[in-house]
Length: 270
Length: 262
Ligand SMILES: Nc1ncnc2c1ncn2[C@@H]1O[C@H](COP(=O)(O)OP(=O)(O)OP(=O)(O)O)[C@@H](O)[C@H]1O
Ligand SMILES: [Mg+2]
Image (cartoon, helix red, strand yellow):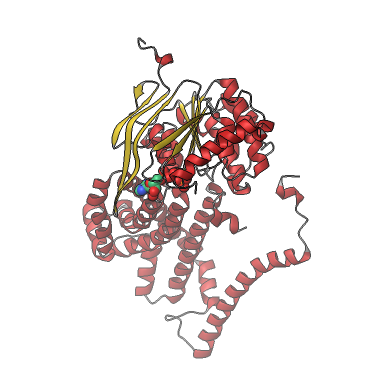
């Protein structure tokens, strides 16, 4: 019959082995890294405040998990809020720039210029301007994360074939319908690759903001625990942060598969 | 309405020229074209590659504005695209994120009408072009010729009174092409459409058209008009008659005089 999925034979033994390998090999690599870490600390006799052993970090993680999760939650909200604002503002700017050449000439220098400002230098100013709450942290995160969204969305929205636009114009579509029916769907793959970079940048942005002016979050925890040479807490916080970063990245990739299943990059990934 | 619209030419071009201007200078694609299509008339345009056939179609559809002269549809000057015209472009231009039927219903969506009201018509068209069972497939699962037929359905779904087609059957095998030609003739006779068909096939032009217009190499001009008075409905058998061969030869000679079809 025509429908391909049900006609496929059941997974063979080789197929099962491949799937198992897809799970076991990454886990194995992680185990190897942890082992090398453990062996290095042991062999070179590295002191705890420089690099604690994995066991010490795990112990600390269990003991202080309340504290870690509380700060992780604070950081996560900054990341997500900053990312959300970046998506909304970034896509809005990209649309404006693509639809209006004058806006492009006026706005793009500002967008690019904003990236050359050192974030560490401007973060304290945000605290002065916006107070000591969530706002300055979201602002710093936004400042880092919106850039990849704008750049990728502009590229995507512009890479529409003229013939495709002619087609919907001939059907009577005005600017907004052209955007909605052609430009946006065409741009989605590019937009999502921008999101992937943006979510990772948002993690960095949130930590920078918490370094500079905060009394909560993993950035704050990193700062204070480094100051007190509390190695196992530093590493617990760092690993927590890495886990958050990876989880968010995976979430964006999952969303992408859901939204653009028709795209080659998704189809070929199998 | 006061003007006797029904009597006006459906398509009217008077002294239409079009020049593309790019970085490398301007290219005169069309040079002083005069053309008139009466209501219900089937026109075919043949001409060498690059002579401006697609450009002509874009002018009539309102996608391009002429550099000189005037384009009229149903007596009114064309100011931009108008939804009463169905266009089949030279490439299928299907949206990869839409299924076959969603692609076909696109013009309905753009008009802001309910697609449910047209779903039955769309499925009927899918059957008609021999794509039964593929309604919910995506374009990447279709061959080039199948994609072209989807493009044809998309132009027909609104049942437009004026149909513009740019080599709609170029990617089809000879057999399917003949079937499509027969279907097109049937639809045209049933629904009283005015058709402007661009084609590379002399047989297709003579088989389908009331008049065949022959264009010169770029800058494109209409150098000959061959009226085809064969009776309707025309059958495939007719393509083997002497009259048919004579008409086809007349078109071919005009093309050769102009510099060949390709
Ligand atoms: N967008 C454009 N910009 C500049 N020149 C163009 C453009 N589109 C077409 N041309 C030029 O105009 C001429 C006519 O092009 P057109 O596409 O109308 O030819 P055609 O008769 O449809 O050819 P074919 O049979 O190969 O489809 C060509 O010489 C081409 O180089
Ligand atoms: Mg062409």
